[in-house]
Image 1: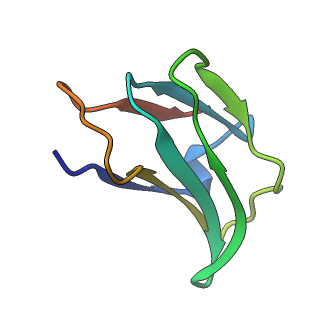
Image 2 (image 1 turned 45 degrees about the horizontal axis):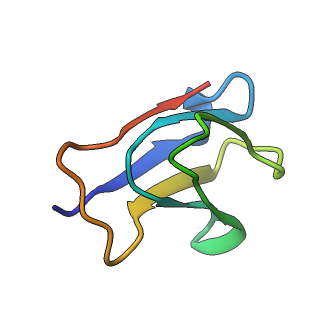
Length: 79
């Protein structure tokens, strides 16, 4: 099951991401198409602090790591 999500920087107030997913997700912080930060989530953790301070033109992309199988779509919220 594919999963791709793009979150605009204006959706964040705390520079954090809340993730509920039984599978590993890849998170990338992008500015004008350039990758500034990348990390993978751990199903045992739910809150992730972005190291890159977000500015208005940035986006956060969340995708399912290839090869992961999930029974339901992950829940991802900007904090």
